[in-house]
Length: 319
Length: 300
Image (cartoon, rainbow over all chains, first blue to last red; front, side, top):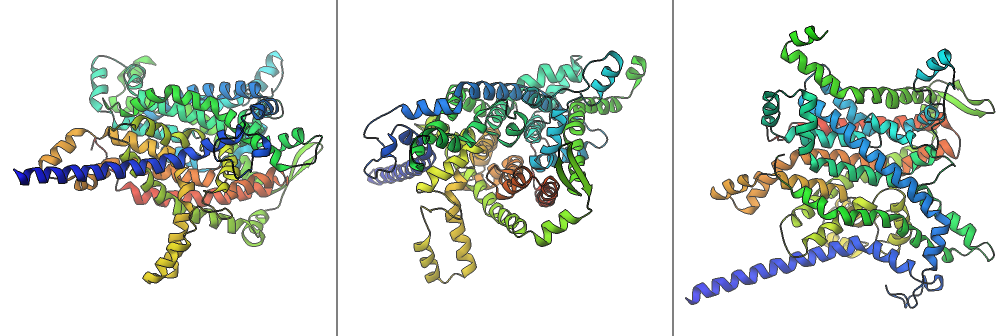
């Protein structure tokens, strides 16, 4: 009797130690990941004079929202929000549809050169965007639908080329053809996903008289909810944060958050320091406020979809 | 037309359908990738100048490439740096993200919160914002990198290591690892996510069967979890390598961009981009060949 009770106690102590260790570890990870966000929040709520006050730890002495007001004004917040959202949602949707479609072809069909083509998909990922950014800009600046517009203009008149700079279509077009930002990775994700799905599904659909396209849209795609949500979120977030392409393709006409943030320091310095001596400390709190504003929409989206999103990861079902 | 399609043997038809599925990508590949890529090769052999009439180039042969390899004081050094960074980064990121994924896989009170927090880097850990964070937040105390203040300098630990009689090379590796830890956790959001998704797809009957056979959790990890995760592992390795090389803050990427748009040397910038990209492609090809044989698919 005593021996059993002792064993139970040891077991209990053991599991207690394990749980404590686990939570300590988790707390360390959580602190390390939340630190920048908390720091941003703490800085953004301070008065500029308190920015480097060592007696202020986390909680500011006096709260102020003037940092946010300044940042909103300097960043052209609502314009940037509109541009970022339209580009992110549009490209996300186009990416999901086109990449899933293409990836299914790679996952389930063998055709001449399929292996070679797939290695080309990986190649598109490896080539830094800076390699092709300049010719791509020229293509978009004098967009002639790759010869089509020249043809029509010689027959029925009209302009030979249009400029897509500053238009969302310069982002949508590559996405529609599975060539958008990091689309190779999305094809890879979808391909892995479709490869892991059991063949029986398609065989059954084929028995029911579905062609490959019908099978894809009615059987495979609805079952790929997992991958779809993941790819959409990735695409949205990456377009939101992407700087080089948007800086070139939106040009001076429009601004999204990536552009606004990258020039925030300079912009703020010119606005805030206009009538005083240049003081970098004046800008510190306002930069954090601006950075926070730029990720607030992302955070809201994230916390809205988060439960759904983690559930979808967990959803085992057919895969 | 339709008659011949119907008469086509099944395997041929399947090939045709496969091509039809991939067709959008082929079009996109030619229009938005191959065409600009070829143009950029042409640029890299030229001395480009901005004239009032537009961009003009004159052919100068391999001049740009020779300059990059033998004369440019920065390019080779930065490229080697970014390779070294990657060599430290990839294994650490993989181990860390697998560890976290396993930690937050099973149910415990507060798991929802932990998951939300660990995926935070997916949302804000990329691009320009990361740069701002690095400049301001991380420099205040925690950040891995060369010119920053470390949270752990590893000074005390390295003294300990010397006492233990380890070689100088090993100690340096150790110090580099410690200095990078914080930077790396902020770059592992996507990887944790992919591993977690992978963990959840491992069928539970594998665990049940193996525990009936008498396998302990530790053995299950090596014999069931790890092999079943290999497809995700490949994806993660490829992703991490590419992400490290083409990141906004990567010094070579910065250099290529600045050469083109602040120094207006389009030809030279194209040559740099080409050299860099060739190096990455070769490296990735090697990694892929090395890992390809070890991938386990459920179907086979």
